Image (cartoon, rainbow, N blue to C red; front, side, top):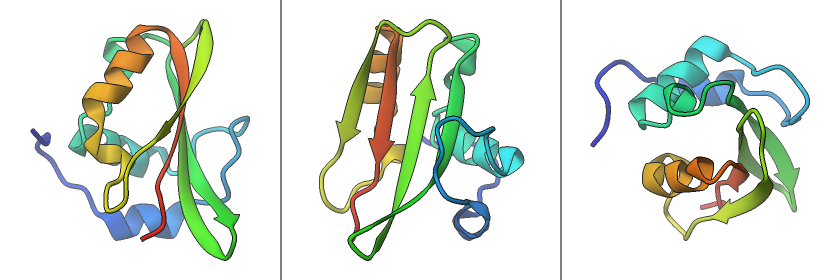
Length: 111
């Protein structure tokens, strides 16, 4: 179930920059709207969680990349979904991985 509240996908894509996991989160108000809309606002369940989001250019495609990192991770997971999906649709998978204190790298397939 999607959360209530405004979310403008074009405003998010227009303001994202190149992905860098070490950089401060970009466009925080817009990424907060995105996380709230797709129920990816995991900070309450995982205090100290950081979220980074941006673009990578791969083989002529612009790929959206996100990292959800708990304060004290014990490992990492790479989440790769199927075609015609996007990371925002996988709240429960992300929530499960984060509950195991894993840093999650997730990216969207082109298409």
